[in-house]
Picture 1: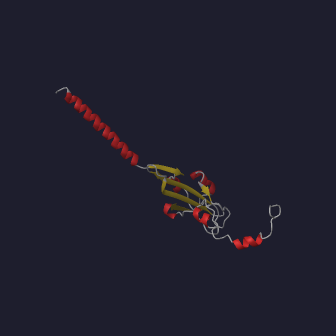
Picture 2: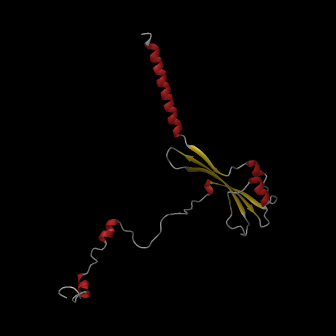
Picture 3: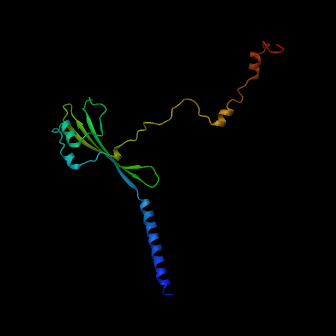
Length: 174
């Protein structure tokens, strides 16, 4: 009896270790994977940008290349630099979901001097569907059965008889 007691204790410890490992694996697999994308914002650099003092070249030196530049550089307000950073979370097998977005917009005057620095978040954005993968058409959309049965009743025997009422050349009896 004394020789079985240490074996029982060892098997119990192995079982507890396996259950602990299994439980910790299950818990960590449920936690989301956090991924940062885009520009890494540095508050110290943002504080160095002063409206009506900092030039466009100085902004590039301080902040680096922008994520994007305004599409209308010669507009009435001048050009704008946008520094965009996003945080995505992925849980299990689901697609990544954006949970946070920060956009720092640096607006320039016509003289290429900083006019304003603005901050935008995820709540300020609007969803724009750039690719719907559907071409709108006029008319009705029919199912397969609708297409098959749509021609029923369109045949008019009287019209068909008038068109081909004479003998057909090259056929027997004609």
